[in-house]
Image 1 (cartoon, rainbow, N blue to C red):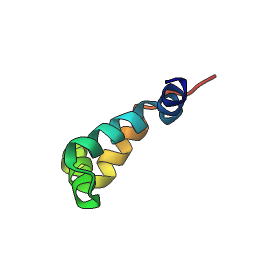
Image 2: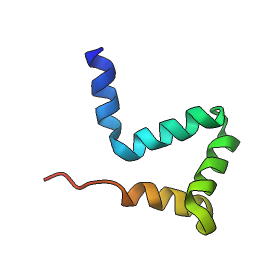
Image 3: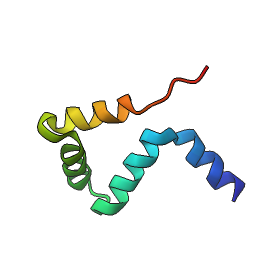
Image 4: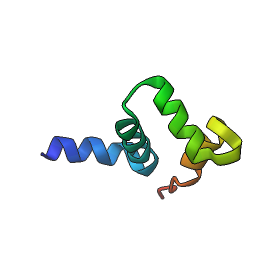
Length: 60
């Protein structure tokens, strides 16, 4: 259980959101691209990736 928690913590919030998007979309690359497009809104896949980048928190 500790190993799973360490791996999830290593992903960070954007990684966890991407894992959830992948799991809910079926796991295929086309489904992941569609999920990123849906999250990115009018900016498409690039907007989805940028959104994941914006929700990161800088650690000090």
